[in-house]
Length: 60
Image 1 (cartoon, rainbow, N blue to C red):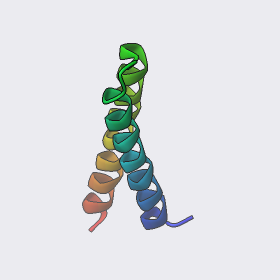
Image 2: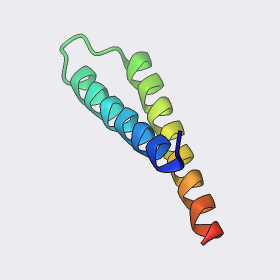
Image 3: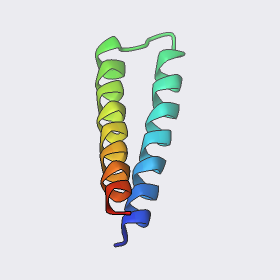
């Protein structure tokens, strides 16, 4: 898998988590622990995306 493909997949997962967080937060029975876990996963993906991009930039 190419780096660009991997970055694209990570970005899609990040967007999906953003939608899931939004949906969960707007439910009447919002589970704060679930939302916090989703946010942690989203942040982890963002950090990974940024790390890969900075590694790529360093190569050029």
